[in-house]
Image (tube, rainbow, N blue to C red; front, side, top):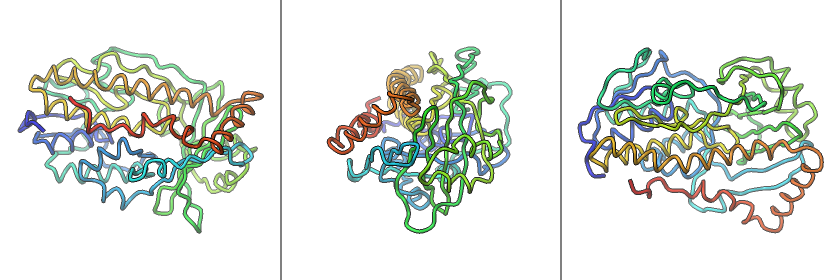
Length: 377
């Protein structure tokens, strides 16, 4: 820390994961931070998140490690299954990097931890505050998500591209008995389902299917659980039992957005989904927002010229988030292989898992082993 944030007034729009993380990071460096949130209360919204070590390093540096451990589940890694439930590959990611924490957590629990820490650090969080017009301020941070007003002010309107995929989210009671510390992915032609425990007796489900029609973007649209069960009726293993417990589900269409060309103009700046929405196929959406938050705060603290600090932040983050988004787009294809391509792909994964597990797991070392704390502003 070099002290250029001492007593500076900063306003943030949005009290989600991106907004609260950057608020905490700025306040711990001495800034006077106000967060404006349009919701009237912090609600039990969203579902599960996987927080890999690259973001975990940031949260731990912010002093949140013990609080997170109290409300999350440690993940051992990922197990891939075929449609029938047979194991295709096991990736014990945690064992591959001893001492690094992979966490599975309900989004609301993470927001609670961040909000409590931000207020304790002196952040003013104002709820029920809709920002209809962007105020003229010395520094305004847009952490206002997918439909960001700050992004639109910086880049103009944009029409996203529908991927041809629709996803359901659901929370169910977790399996009784021995806890399962893995995220489990079931792959079938044109569809896949992911499930993992969240602690406190809950299990998360995300199920994606290719379909020609589409649902409006966003994850708050409700659907009949019977539609989810029908879409995955041919799946085996634990999937039928999980789906039988679904009592309510949200549904949303998956859209691709480009990484914003302009992230800042010297006094306004964006991060997280406002800057680079990503498909949920690498479990890195919230993680990239947390990385952004640390890097933005570090640049503002280290570089006295605000415009230069914001430009440096964008220059550091664009290559990384672009590569992560491309990896997520690739998984969107790989999970839904059909015909001979699926048989060959699954056979290759089985072989790598058995004969060269380090090679299989090492494909994404560049994501999980990244340390935002070590990046020089």
